[in-house]
Length: 267
Image (spheres, rainbow, N blue to C red):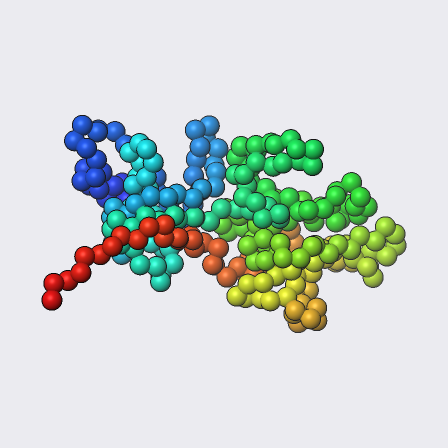
């Protein structure tokens, strides 16, 4: 469903669910894309909790908040097995990009000394690596590509890896300080993967001889089962998406807070 059709449904729903003296209301449409804050930055969607006031095969509408606020959720991002009833109170958590520590990008960052920092409009999930200790410029370039390289969605390559399980184990890094060893011991980062497409590891390395990147696909026993060679920086995102993106990240999480008691049919 598109935003225009969703707005028409919300207008009808608002007429039926607001007091007659209430003429203004706010509305949000969740379709799997990013939102926009008051400053104009694109931001991830946060969880919404409210009462179901409308549902059909294409959309679910919640009324929530102390003021008149409606949220319409496209059925395409909701689990098919979920049953929605008018009057149920539910909490819907749409997909939001995360950091490697599991926190969402919209959440503040707390430093070791207790300082809390908010990053408005943050879009990058930084690899948990100390750049100051890395000796290989090729490895630093790879890290930058993984952190900022865009995929076919609004996620970066790093966020695709996070959604595929890369937070389950610490990253493994090969950074040989001797530049003479770059061929036999290439700069590399290994990510744990646990998704419908792969249970194992991705070893992303720089091939100095060919001046391209490569990827070893390993099973859960760290045995190489496939190798993709000659990957340039413009193709890295597509290759990794094809390897690990199973599409489940798009689905919102639905929790029933209070289920309406349905009237029993007369016998």
